[in-house]
Length: 352
Figure 1 (cartoon, rainbow, N blue to C red):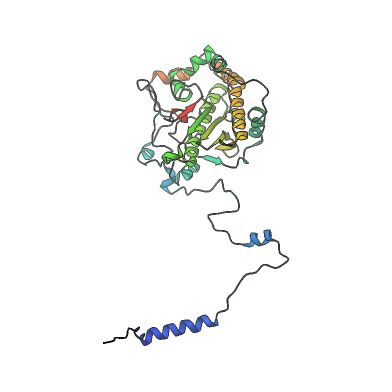
Figure 2: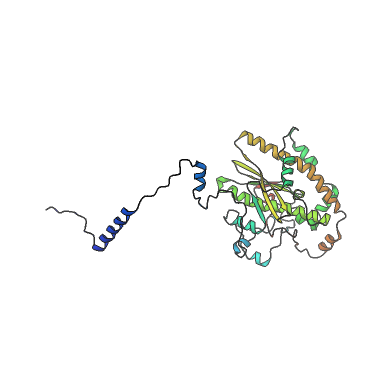
């Protein structure tokens, strides 16, 4: 017995829909965009619509909704310095209010963390084009200049890295320690390294986020010291600088941190970037770091000593505050409300 397999006949309603669709498509004309023969390729590309995820220009600054609680979060989850010697007193960089303490901090790997930085007045200039003239002049004078001197050795660094005896007394005063000593082994650091491992899932993005807070703390702490010694509220951007290096196994990026009085914000600008598998970049990185050490042991150390010696004898206001119960005080009028610490206090970072 032979049976015939065939498709069932479509119902009338389905058949009518198919016929209507076929008639509609026959009337449509296929439209194709062809650029004019005389039109250049560049002009044609400019006319092509771009997706929102690929803007034609790098957007460094964007507005943040002030009412959204997401952006009101503190910058880090740890409000206290993780000291290598736990028996020493620990100070928060900034006091956490009850409202901030109840809000959980975002991790640096979170995609919204950059918005939190903006809310706290910290901006990352990834292109390095927004730095004022004073910063550009400083970088060209001290950091990116060619070197003709022999390299520094460890003995020279250890010999010249101390502050004056009066300066040490000011730095170690209980009222100043929470600003001048983020860890027991550091005195007013100016250079911090954020080392991240891509093999373990970390990214340069996370390192930049952490460095943004670390560098801002370095700048704000030194600005506080300048304010205490001079009784002034405003300073040129190059008077208080911090530097960070974000480092992976493949690349390194050097940033300069400063405070701009014009917009009253903290900024993090790129100085140089280096591919660690390119010999020329390795030499350039070595040059810039050595120049930074020369600056730190030379011009910066002299300037810091002058500021510290102006604070001796210890101001009476410091003694009055330390004689009473210690209360946290804002670093500066425009210091970002943050519990971030310099990256020298993190587990996998080093500082100078």
